[in-house]
Length: 445
Image (tube, rainbow, N blue to C red):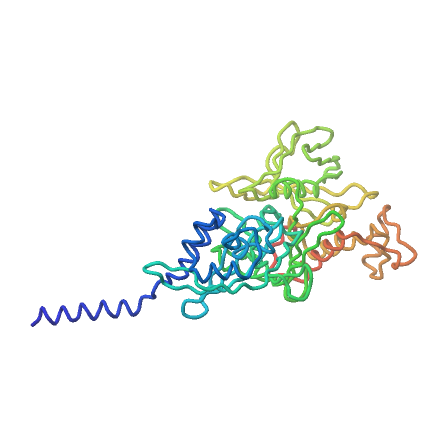
């Protein structure tokens, strides 16, 4: 009796498990295999006859005039081409069940840089143990133009990171990057009403962290030789800019920009002239080699000076309103730098050249300006305007720039013009000035 009772329980458990487990949709599987194998053999006659009923073959023959007497050659056109001519390589299909054995299929194929989308509704029947296509109801196909500014496989740099874009058939675009072994990812969805505008959000197909969670809107700028993706927060403030035309790697680009921000002529606290160039640092006429150190491809702000002058060693370089402060540093066992105590103050020595000229020379998407005090950021932002002859109303700005021999205000601010790069840098700095102090990491004393 116990054995019988156990057997009944076993049967009940098997029955409940079968009820709980979803049944595999073998009709959907058939269609996915049909398209995959069909694309490989170009839906030749033998393949079509094997997988279509006589009713479906007759439909092809009766409804379409083509160069195949049996109508079977039309299957190629019907399943993923338009008008009888080739629309490029077969890309993917999406199979969705409608009712019973009827399925809606979206066929995508490459056409130059665009994607051709072709819908067709298919009804299946079982012939013996095999499925066959019994009826065909084609829809109207159309091209899905690719975005000329964001192409599949393109690279987009911000700071020391490089994101790779993947354009999907539904027009959404995934961006992925690796940072210190961690995957970063986000996805853009085109705005239905505004050209080159996107909604930025999580990528449902990726496990990576979205570092731009506070920037729900993106705008593509593809003009004047620039290809930029601008990311805005909920208040409309520009937070980041991804550069789609970086010539070198993102890490090297960031390193080059940081080096350019340090270059110039300075005076040390003891009166010695100091010249910082891309590859050298000269103190009191004694030249030494200079290198900008990276950590996991990220700019550290640390320079290494090797040669015959008193600044030989490793220094953290911190930009200031009046110049640069150098803090002597050493690396710990993990490769992180810490300040040792000694520091050198270098004061900008050129009254005839803007301290923040670099803000008008290249895009500030390396993020180094975010380490500065807000008072310094204010001068940096307005220096861009001052170089274009802007006449200031604020007394502190009048006093500061009137002492600069390079400043030549125009008779009217209506005559002031700024280029795209300058306007974006102004927006980036303004957004940083608007951030709460608690959310900022400032290294300037």
